[in-house]
Image (cartoon, rainbow, N blue to C red; front, side, top):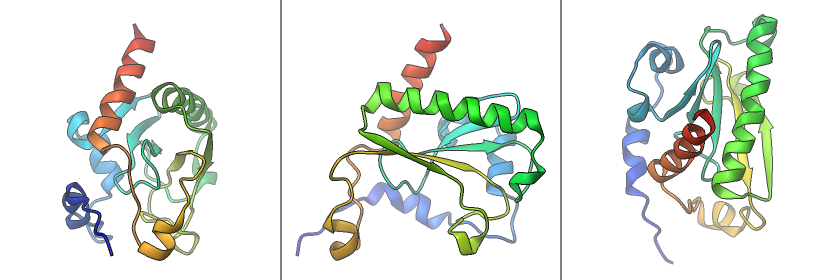
Length: 164
């Protein structure tokens, strides 16, 4: 059996989410060290961040600044901006990585699969033909084709070009 090393993930695994501590998304929203936190874009009501535990390379999250676990609590302006950022995220990922498709959605509540269930967030997951293969099933491992740092840099370049 071959071993695939992804030692860069150690930092993220070791800072596992502790539900008794401050909300991770609120903490990141209040900090201004975007590169260290992999924040790509800050809107008025939401921000876009790289997923630290991605399903595929380029997996993004859209997170409202306001802390809520219930999508129905969002104001219309927050929901509208989230949808706009969803469109923008698809465009950014498409330009940077050219995936064949996308999965988009929210896991609301821990029983629905939310890793952080106290603060809603929308997933934008790029998909490629063949990215679901035997590795997660047989090898119990995901293979990422690009590091989170390289994906961040590629996406930020696209975002900055769009802004200028």
